Length: 399
Ligand code: FDA
Image (tube, rainbow, N blue to C red; front, side, top):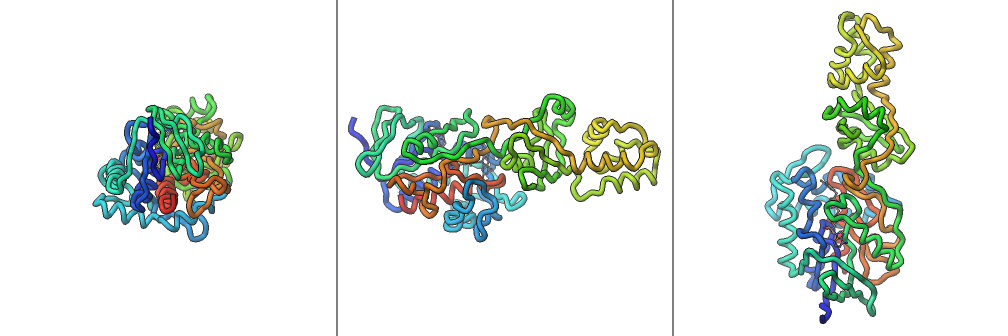
């Protein structure tokens, strides 16, 4: 079969790959994007509960990106600055997609995440980009000063530039693979240790048994761990703890460490229980605590602390112990739910091998790494898509 020749071959039709394709296509480059999935942008489709939290207004870059993790979080600054959250919002507006800010600067589609995918596929079509679905790369290597890839459909593509855009390992069921990491290693690039992030944490069986009746209970919490803290919602599930605060801390938590949770942050639980006791000592302790935290949680806390009976029957020490059990609850996760449910992969292709303006591999001409495949991981709340748009855009200007 005669090889097809293009200027740019992009592997992965996700958020970053499609953005890169649009930009390169608009510059008049011949571009082919391929993906082994049957549809492009599958993670966009399921993101944000089907409404895609496509960016975050609070994405910082002036002082170095505080909302990103990686060996060198500053690596992301240049791309985030050159194609910012505001630039992406302009595109969303131009496409006539209605959006709203939910909380903490998080922007969601009013209607459906599919609108974002349609915007990108329309833009790719208008820019003359070729999209091949249900195809993967069997072999790829350098050929002269370009690249040659043998595809699973038996065809061969030659390209001047090769863009690795297959994302991370999260949710293998949806087709996530470590292909970009392997390909990068094949070209001599270093890959940092990868681990699931933005993922629910799990606990040992005994504690899990105690927490089971709480499945479905949510609180606004402050969760501390790994040298940082997040004030967001926390959710008890039948497998452990989840919700935004836990997902956020999971990116910082390491095996063997404990996390500390305040389940009524800003509340002086001791003082409130003491006041309740003075007002009505006949009130059950768990009932009084149930005015501060959800009733089921109050019952569980009292049970775990072995506190029974009426407020009049418990002393100050017990009230203080309950205060600590609510606002300084220290638990040791045993692990996380892993890549099966993780929203992102921490780590990836080492950024010191890449040019921060262009995402080009410094030592391998014509090779680019964008999106989650690179060692740049955002917080929950639209930061990961913004990194995909920004890095895809940056590579698209030059590849
Ligand atoms: P992405 O994963 O989007 O795309 C990679 C593409 O490569 C996929 O289409 C895949 O099929 C393809 N591929 C993989 N291996 C291949 C191979 N070997 N050959 C060919 N193709 C291959 N972020 C955010 O900012 N806001 C949000 O609301 C959410 N919500 C969310 C929900 C859930 C459930 C998940 C799992 C993740 C999120 N995220 C998120 C994270 C966000 O989806 C993620 O960071 C971006 O999609 C990363 O974009 P990329 O283009 O790098 O990879």
